[in-house]
Amino acid sequence: MKPSPWLIPRLGVNIDHFATLRQLRGTPYPDLVEVARLVENAGAHQITVHLREDRRHIQDRDVFDLRKKIGISLNLEMAVSPEIVKIAHKVKPDWVCLVPEKRQEVTTEGGLDVLKMRKKLAPLIADFRKKKIKVSLFIEPDVRVVEASHELGADAIEIHTGKFCNAAQKRFGAKSASIQKQELKRIASATAQGHKLGIHVHAGHGFDLSNVRKVAALGGIEEYNIGHSLVCRAALVGVDQAVREMLSAIQAP
Ligand code: PXP
Image (cartoon, rainbow, N blue to C red; front, side):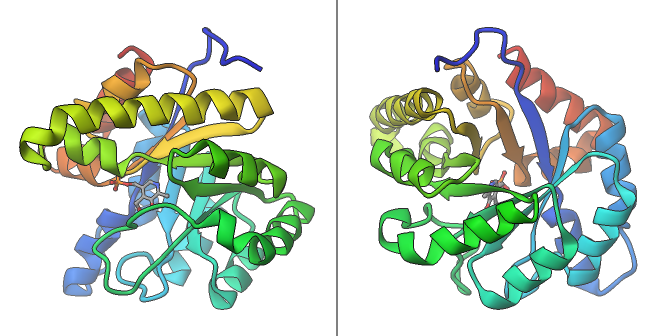
């Protein structure tokens, strides 16, 4: 199955860092449901949150609250940990996105090691799907891992674009241009393989208004989950404008 040239990508807005601001002071604001409503009214398609094991930003009650009160899709990013899996089954989000998680990391570094985790992932994926919760696996842009994700019965892959995005932000100095080129190739191959197998293709991590256009221009990615840069932009221009700008960047790169 080839990606349709008419495919209009969806935007999932990761609102974790609104919760980071709240947790910094232990205040009742910003109200995440209010944030989610602004995101929804601006035309985004999904609210994404990561309930981390250390609860550094999103709290359990946020996820239950959002589930009850938002009208658009809810995507719960989560580690493969029994405690969080139990919560996810109670919340029943539209999607779960399984991610690797290390306590000390600033943000999710790298994709899931699907090839090594097959035995652990297979029953988890089957259980979620039985409860009508769709599953995506956060993976590196590697064709073998796309194939393994499909074999395991995942509904989608979410391509970890961190390496490309860091290079596009010139974080690798003189090597940035060649790394970008190489990573764009890997993203394009993983996307093509996903479409060939008939698994949905999402992407996320490290996107800003500039680098996301280069990936969107490849075509074929159905959904983008974007957090940090959008929250930073919202601090300057408001949530509504920040969401609209990002929608335009992914849909008309
Ligand atoms: N997708 C996944 C699976 C993530 O773990 C994250 C970070 O929480 C994102 C997307 C969003 O990344 P960023 O905040 O860099 O836009």
